[in-house]
Length: 233
Image 1: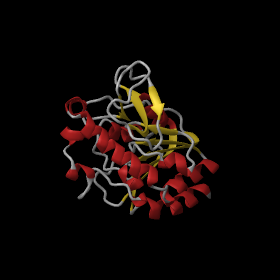
Image 2: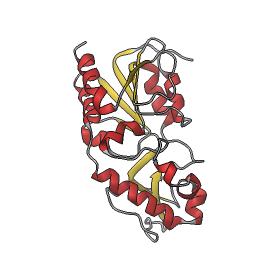
Image 3: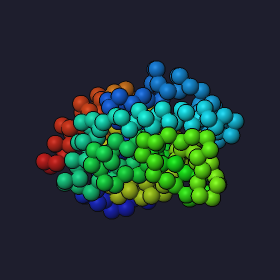
Image 4: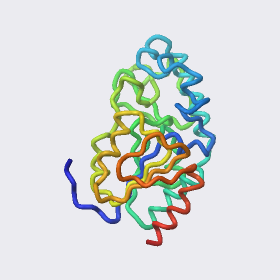
């Protein structure tokens, strides 16, 4: 793997559902998570949308309402605080906008965004919808039904090349709240520079990539002190 020269001022933060869990948003794979309540095949595939579009839209309308009602937690705010001292890029598997609302200015959503809709006729037509629902019959100017701007199972992950490029030269890589079991996004950690400082934060450690220091605990409890340490280095 290509090892670029480290950028000493650059931090990449890679986040998953455990990042937003302290804000009250349900995770997907934990006990009681969304995939224990709904079959993936029913709500999170292109085939499900073709078969029962109203059911799929209702599922994501509920997720959108919950996400927009939630507030950034201390972990989100701590990550945003890093920008006072570092060049920070957040790469997130989450589809909420809590990083942005906490103040992070460079956020790459590899699995899409709940606050956006896109055309089924032209995927390049993407619309900001905030907390508004998408209904059957809501159409883009070209006449295509709108769908959530979300990566469903079987679809290509978004902005992966851009994300990889940031991992390659970051002096610090912080991984928070992800089981590192959803590929290809989970494979991004393998692009971390061999000499980068690497930290993994989560309540439960499912997979520990080589070279990562583990801080076990919730994002809101662990990140503020870690950020204080890094900002005083």
